[in-house]
Amino acid sequence: MSALTPQARVAVIGAGAMGAGIAQVAAQAGHPVWLLDSRPEAAAQAIAGIDRQLARRVSSGKFDPQAHLTTMARLQAAESLAQLADSQLIIEAIAENLEAKRELFRQLEGVCSERCILASNTSSLSITRIAAGLQHPERLLGLHFFNPAPVMPLVEVVSGLASDRQLAQCLYDTALNWGKKPVHTRSTPGFIVNRVARPFYAESLRLLQEGAGDCATLDALLREAGGFAMGAFELTDLIGHDVNYAVTRSVFDAYYGDRRFQPSLIQQELVDAGHLGRKSGQGFHAYAEGAERQAPAELHSALRVEQCVVEGDLGVAHGLLHRLREAGVRLVERDGPGLLRVGDAVLAVSDGRLACQRARDQGLSNLILLDLAHDYASAGRLAISCCASTSPLARDQAVALLQRAGLKVSQLSDSPGLLVLRTVAMLANEAADALLHGVASAADIDLAMRAGVNYPDGPLAWADRLGLAKVVEVLQNLQAAYGEERYRTSLLLRRRLAEGRTLHD
Image (tube, rainbow, N blue to C red; front, top):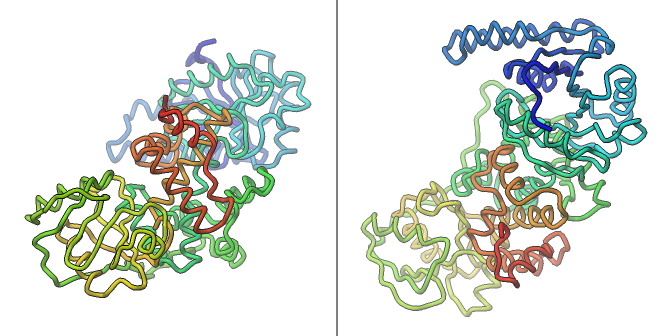
């Protein structure tokens, strides 16, 4: 079954921000669209809002005036379910309430033809459970857009236990025609994005709770070293802590309390206080008018470094050497375990161990650990951590070296895996488990995380680039440091490493 033709009528039920956005997407793609809401005049008001938004884009030269007129001509407010009878696709975008959704689809079965595809925009509820009890559960699927729907490219096409594969492909192809980046996923808790993304928030929250760094510094490191569009605290402030915390709780409960998804007491306290982020004016950061944004912590050195010793292969951090050469630092290269030496300082990329543990294990004095960067050749900031025994002079020498490479340096307390490394390792671990469990293909998991939450790399591709041996080593060291099942290594990572294969093989 191919994509719906532009002549096929689409109906959207629920005229909130998401429903209105989906209706706009379908209308811009050429479909006649009904928009229905249980609140009087809500659908008409939503259409008027779309009109104003597109008019602003026309006036700024970002949207074609004729496309504005034709899009609005395709949008109509419906007053009853009966008016949707001629629809070929009906997308539900009402509140996240299982019984309300099930009752709506039961009513729709009595209104629309058997050829009509039914879709739910749910972000967390089971498509299998929503479809249970329908006369034709095979024609119900998930079509999960991301907010704002006209802007965000990702659409998760979600198949429940009874969902027809041909209909899933039809929705996939239709979303492609709408200019979206669709992915196929099974109906499991969180689908792809809301499951795989949990560690992105969780690791920053844990480091904050442990006092490893402040919100501004941790956010800056994820952006400027990790290459993420936003830090975890900025992003949860934008999403809203009530929403983000509820999703975390939902996934945690759905997986029977699996500690990988354990919610944060810090975030719960924000919700309890009504500090929901941007929409309330206060979250991890302050958003009230005139509020000053805290600057990330940064170390500075007045020393001038002219030379350092490179012992062995630095692996993923080889881009740092190019920056040092470009800055005029003389590099003395010799065999070794992958270290940099400058003055009294010994620098090494973290492997997930505490700095104090690694210094004792390897007999290293004045050890300074470097965090992961998405690209060491272009990163703007890098985290370091030190042993308690590391001298102030050695730390100063290490900072001076990194400054010569053009890096801002932020120190975290001695924490396993620092920030970016542990976050990426845990994202890869969760993505590997999703792949192992058949939630989606490796390509679709990576695409979902890039297109849905703007990650610089898909977590599986990132793990392949780091090397599965490195990822497994980091996870094992995290688990050893914390003694928690939360950091257990995915069976698929272990298997692919033993087979000498990548996650995309």
